[in-house]
Length: 331
Ligand code: GCU
Figure 1 (cartoon, rainbow, N blue to C red):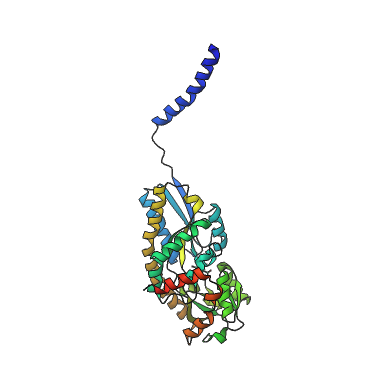
Figure 2: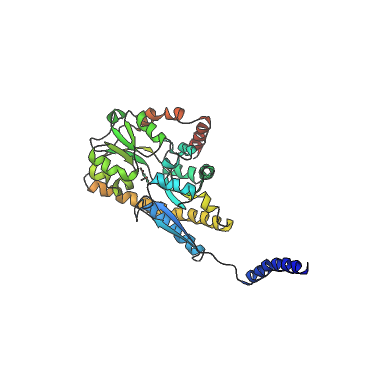
């Protein structure tokens, strides 16, 4: 009995000693390295913004949290990066909400055609209560929306001819982002949509698999699509918001203080991206004009808006239409 008692006592003391020796050590400061994916190249405004975000996080944690920024789709195209975020393979991405809306369909509301009156309206919506609601709305799908970034407005470009009217687009094969709403937009104009990853558009234009695509000035210039599709027709059919989003699964592993710090750093990086965008938009337009692209403005924006208007009935539910009213009411 004595032996058994001694044995039990010794077992009980092992964890006591173990705990005691742990308490003497200073708490370990774990260094954390996280990865952020962007499909645009180094120097592009969104990448400039992401690097500022990473810099702020590093500075504010005294180097404890490092965010490595991977530009040029090094970690995969937009869709596969978003999938990896969902299960924690990648920590952050800067993405257009078009592909994200396949995972979080409510986001389609924010990319409806001719929804925003101008850039000011766009920012008043996104940096206000409505924008905050949609940043949070992606949480149920495995993401944390951190901040919106500027992405200008999108217009059509093609290899064939200038577009002045809706009829000019008839039967043209137009590349769209991987989004059912974008497919619908192209169909509503009488053109034929082809969903392709951004990185596949250049060769598709070159080989004639598609006749055209649509994007903002910086993307048209940086992707070199202007080399093969020299007709750019300004119709500004949509302003597709872009976001820095985080993997919820991975953010949940951090302390609440670190999560708040990261969210704040993303918000604080926004001004740098917006300034870089304004500059780059001008130089991109100048670059494609200098390269001899044929640029025109469509005849009548109202004609395009009217052709796309049925999408507000077909692609949105009642709740979506209520959001649209709220967005339109923003000054
Ligand atoms: C924008 C955006 C890209 C996106 C691209 C597209 O340029 O910045 O991230 O991939 O649109 O049309 O796919």
